[in-house]
Length: 302
Image (cartoon, rainbow, N blue to C red; front, side):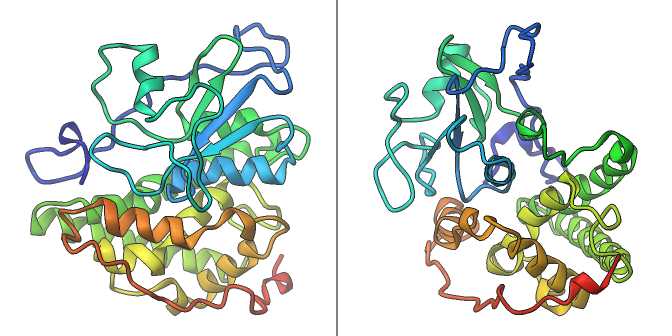
């Protein structure tokens, strides 16, 4: 369930703000100069916000420039943990057992929710940023997913997708009153319907070019049928029931390197085993069977 400070009196989920907003720059004027090998990502493959940064790191081929450690997908009462297991590992940089240690190193009085991703400065031994928005753009350069000419349109799309879909599934899933849930879930599906209509006539959210807006939506869509449809009661329709969204999801999944960033074992075990109030048995569903490699047919659109 959400951190207590993220639940209001109406039973609505209200996400906390990111705590650390440093910025890596080429000239180092920010105090965080761009240097190969200096920075390290702490992520969860289960978390859609962290998944965005994993995708950009993969697409930009930064694996040898920015290191990465994946936490245990099952978050316990102490939060995200560093353990050895399939697809996750102990912390090779600081020897932290829990990601909360990084936050406490920055602020001994930190008492908000510990989140992923975290961009860590190995030289100064501190958090640069825990904002997925900022980290995505810091990793973005030559192959530009936030081009100058399209920024206003990308920002407009992001401003619609984030509250209504990315966070919308959480507002439905973490609601603690019937009204809060129904308001959130109806708004979510109205928004998905609008995106379905948009994608019926264009290949990507901002025309013919892949941008960060697509990858922000992708990390929610890829989790939808496996988790949000059942676990968060977002069950009016599945993504496979939307012709355009289903084709769009397969199109993005089949982009070079993207399938490698998707780990359904981590995704499902995190949600179904971490949220005991929602799923007290902690039984992880076997399905669904999703054929993400079938032809998507989206290349006919412009």
